[in-house]
Length: 282
Image 1 (spheres, rainbow, N blue to C red):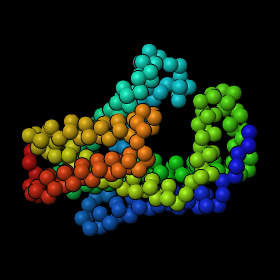
Image 2 (tube, rainbow, N blue to C red):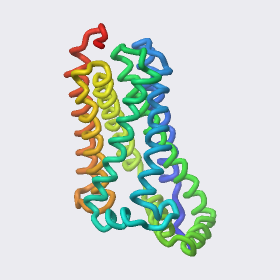
Image 3 (cartoon, one colour):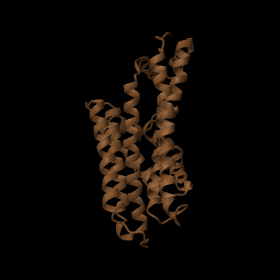
């Protein structure tokens, strides 16, 4: 199988996107550390929270329960039931990141960060969490796409698709769709992805502040389930779009995700962070 070559424009856009996806979070972390004289290990703890709870715990469990075919596993009663009901599937797909990632924040504050009670800890953790997610979601994706584009231009991609078609037709279809998307990629698409990550980082900072105060003040423990619900609701809407349940446009989806990011950040920052004093409340 042959594919149209990926031009220099899309390749340049992907390279620029990958570089910015790494550089911008690092710049944010560095500026925050220098301005607030925060320990960089708190930012690293936020990054580790995402890697452990989102990638190593959440994704394998989620895929095994909801999308077993993606792991080369046979369908089971639960996955068959949910896949026949896309709205429930989207709800379940949204709950996984909500529960795992917010519980990860809670665990981090209760363990490795338990002695860091200054409010800047919450922002540092959110920058680390959201920053490493941006590097993974955009940076790693663009690097992978560049490799695929080079394979398309050298003719090796067609062989890969033929092999996938013989073993896993669904994966072959996904590879064909990816090839079509790569040939049409523009700088505007890269820009949209970067803007989305900015709002995602805002959300993670806001959610980190919520969970931080849930750990710091027993009377605010309800902020933890609130963070879970906000996270789950945001990913539920995204899953509705990804699964084709919702007919909303890409711009409408990005607008909704931006609204979640801004409102979560502003609510946590102005209602908690700005009003807080420096004396910890046990």
